[in-house]
Amino acid sequence: MTALLLDETRSSDRGGRWSRVGLWVAVGILGVLVLMSILAPVVAPYSPTDQDLTSRFAGPSTVHLLGTDNFGRDVLSRLIWGGRSSFAGVLIAVGAGLALGIPWGLGAGYGPRWFRTVLMRMADAFLAFPALVLAIAITGVLGPDLVTAMCSVGVVFAPVIARLTAGGVAEVRRREYVLSARMSGCPAHVILIRHVLPHAIGPVIIQAAVFAGLAFIIEAALSFIGLGIQPPAPSWGGDLNNAYQHILSAPGQVLAPGVLIAVAVLATYRIGDECRDLLSTPPV
Image (cartoon, rainbow, N blue to C red; front, side):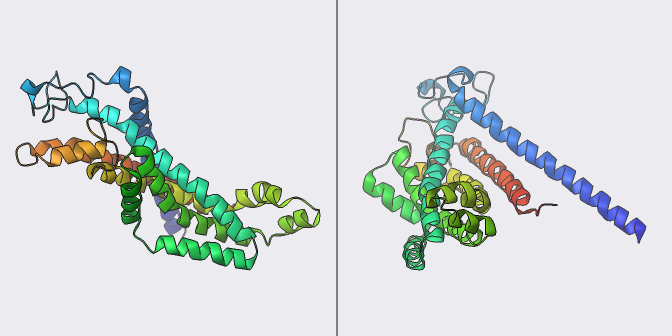
């Protein structure tokens, strides 16, 4: 029995070590991608919009490490510059979702029952529509643009964040320290910000990490169909669309932007999984 317990402990330790390795690999990948995007004017070997029609569809070489596209533009330079729009889009979408969803959930979770019912029915109405379809509809009405597109994605994210926040607030508001603060005459907004929100925000943080990975995919999808960054500006989704149009003549062109999007999404989800494990672990 003792040997069995020791084997299980060692196996758990090894799993924990490998989990931490995977986490740091994901953090390192995202860190490198963010740093390269920020330093794009210094790191990128060429301008992302410079064309050389004599070098169309050139393969990887010492001059162009990832080759060139159908306009002779350097693929590596466009991917480096395209990271700016991808990471900016994720920040806009998640930030807009949190900015709308958290106050929405606070009002629903702390307000009177009729107010909660009204706000939650509004959230249900939004959730009845598929997220990507609703984002496309909003962007189509307001016009194609990165900020508009990702703000519409944030509007789609907000009802889920509102429901999570409302559920956490409804549970925390019944605790003794919150009741004591109310009986002492503490203003409602102070109670919400200082006593309620810090203890109810855990599930929201986990969901925000999940939404960050989803926002990479949606930003790429919107750019792919022409509702995000407009050409010739570089974007991962736009470059993937451009490569897809020439997949028969140059099938290798889809690999670089496709793999980069997948790596960014997987790394983001890995960090989100770690956040979930940390926040869901009960205190010792």
